[in-house]
Image (cartoon, rainbow, N blue to C red):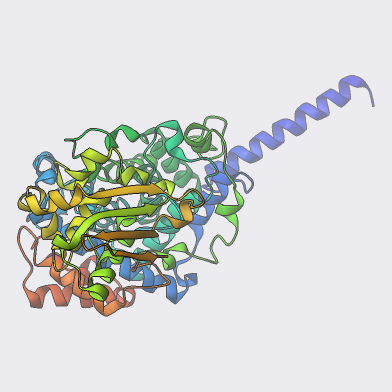
Length: 492
């Protein structure tokens, strides 16, 4: 074969391969190979009827808990008001929780997203730095109202698949995002919200890849939100990724083309946010077989999950030894690297000026656990933040880092109380209650939901709240998820 003929053959083969790939992509199918492509194929193609019943039930638990928390925030969180007012200027059929206001899907996701974390009462995933459903649920519920009818099982599958993706992305990190100055939970959550939105908009694999690309273009929450005394952005942070997820899915559906490797690419997520340090096996191993939504932690107390072991330890010491606040000379809390942000700077954490900072404070939550009969939503209101007894007790709390504790101990802690009569009392919590190994059962989770629903700006009656809970528990049997949840879920 002559050199020219050989070159001609190579060129022809390359042209045929390019044409094959073009036709393949235009058909809505993504080449199997790259990490991002495999994620997109899974998100778009995994059949809801293949989802194990355990994952479906876990999705119901996440939905019940998330809806309740948002309803409570609609009535208790002044931080959400600017988001509600802005969202109310839009038009459409998606509702703002607890307000009786309808607007566009993206703006409803914004307003309800602001509510999702405002009380710091939503679910968490202890092994990785994420709150997987805080932006996902507002985005999914907004699209549920405004798109073609969706079965209950399909809706729950969108939640389970999106939540699982957030957890896997977080587990794959081999360099902490905080090292680059980022704040992980809303950034990671954006991709799960976008995945759920893609399923509800019925995107194919190529369009799902486009939506994930568009999500990456909107991802960026700086760690600086932790460091200013008076900011409330950390409370309402999920508003932005929730809105961005809806926007990404709708633009992808309209034909906006993204890029091929939003996660593993040389300018993709892991390169930008973790300096390229990640393990793809943590994402791909068991994908479609094991769903991390089954291992979420649900909160007993409305504060950062990292404060929970200290609340629990203090309550145990109170119950065992009968100590009162006046008996305390000093308190030392010991925790992991992850929990350092909950104790430093120590003077600010001893006297937080806004509710969200109090919820991110080991000294203040310990004081609340000592003084209040139970740590509740009322433990972080304005009167509580100004309570001299709590502030005086918080001033006695110090913190030490346990050198050999890593992120796997982010919900663990030790409390040592020195009393005024010379005793030293100590309690350690290996994994705070609410972890899947120490779960809050369905009955307790529903009780939490009912209590939260009663706190809405327009409160649900006990009967209406109970009916909504029943609708969620039986949602997988419904042919129309929106009809099953009813207007009461949206326009109380």
